[in-house]
Length: 97
Image (cartoon, rainbow, N blue to C red):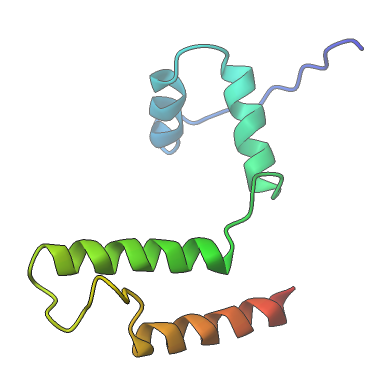
């Protein structure tokens, strides 16, 4: 299948962040742009409520291990309040689907 070339313009002032980002990546800029566009279209793995729960547990455990969260137990790193908020978020995510 032949390649299709699509060009677009970036403003050297307004799009400075994009230009810097593109310049900071070695290798094929076309591949980087394709991957980024696919992620934006949702072809990348979606974040699940399980991913969010895992991140919350890890952060709460880290906080407790630093000695700053006496109310947080490392055996049960998802306190009731966090569990309730995550359950509510999960319900909202189901509504969006």
